[in-house]
Structure formats: structure tokens, C-alpha cells
Length: 137
Image 1 (cartoon, rainbow, N blue to C red):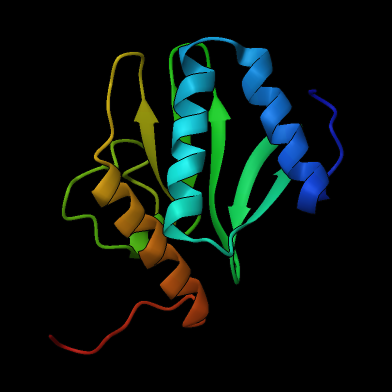
Image 2: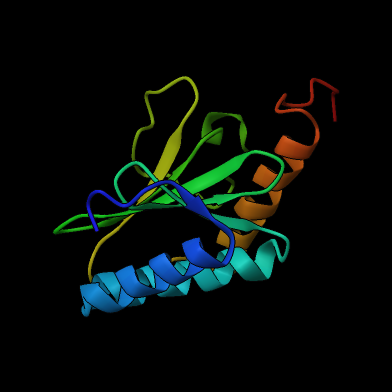
């Protein structure tokens, strides 16, 4: 799995499903749950596999990656610093100028409604050309 080539479409979805199955623990369950939420929030999302087997979700540009580590599942949003996060889901990579991440540890739950709102906001940002609106509210 580590040297998996860049793929997209059905083959990428298959590779991601295989990765989830191979994990066979809470990390696989968590990644599967977050993947389902991404697809609910953005039905036209494209699944890809890049960077040595890392799942990537895109729509009009990158939305986020889904990395698995021994103690966490990390969802890194490509343009997370430009997204509003009223629920405070971002808890990692907070000092960066562009990216933000959500680290999920064993036993932790993520607010599904707030997560789907972040996904939709990321898609909207991509659709708008990647720039945060400067209009006053």
C-alpha cells in the first residue's frame, strides 16, 4: 500500500476501501465514518489516492486528506485556514497559513453536522476560486 500510485475514480475508491479494511481497527472505522460524511456533504466529491496511499477528497480542487497514524486519524483541509470553524473542529496544524486539520483519537466523536458544514464550505471555497470572501456581513 505504501507505494500506491496516484489514482482516481473507481480504482481510487477501491484502494481507499481496501485501506479501511486492512486497518481493521478503530482507525478504519473512523476513516470509513468520515468518508461517509464527506460523501453525504459533497455527493459529487472525487476520491483519489496520492502521496504513498493517502486518501484525498476533491471537488473543484482539494478538500482534505485522510491520514491514519498509530494514535490518530488526521483529516487535513487544504484551505482550512480560510474556513469558518464555529464548532471548533480544527484541533491540529493551527499555526499554518493555509492548512488546518482535525485529529481524531480512539473513542472520540466528531460532530457530524459541523463536519459536513466544513466540507460544504471547503467545496464552496474551491468553487469560488479559492479565495475567502472579503464582503462584510
